[in-house]
Image (cartoon, rainbow, N blue to C red; front, side, top):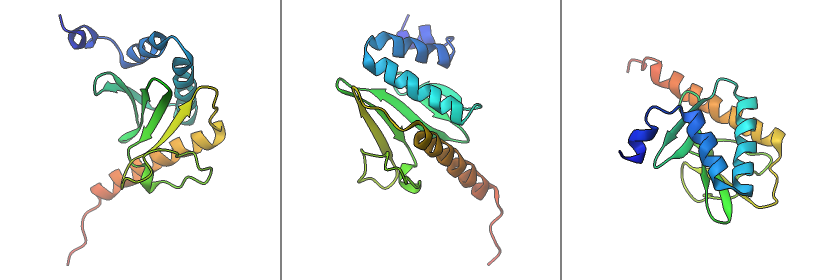
Length: 140
């Protein structure tokens, strides 16, 4: 049985718990902290696992993903370039037209209040984009 088949019936939240615990170091703790902040900002956020086990948080579309690398963890906002970031949390993927990311290295702390504001802004952007798609086009 393939790993994907074995995980197919496992809830995404449990898969994410297992992924973070499996990291066994500061990266799992950092991602768990950020996950808790996401849930504080958006209590009805949907957790999914996509793209080879990547945790994804959605609210009317993808808000952000959480990835782990050897020396850092990354929270990627798919529409980050469209969001205001007054606290300057975005520090990665700054050259793209759509994505922006926050890289966190061992010992670094992300400002919780600013991060939750960014999460809420991403969800609001998704909701507005979804509403724009539903509006009838004006007659020419």
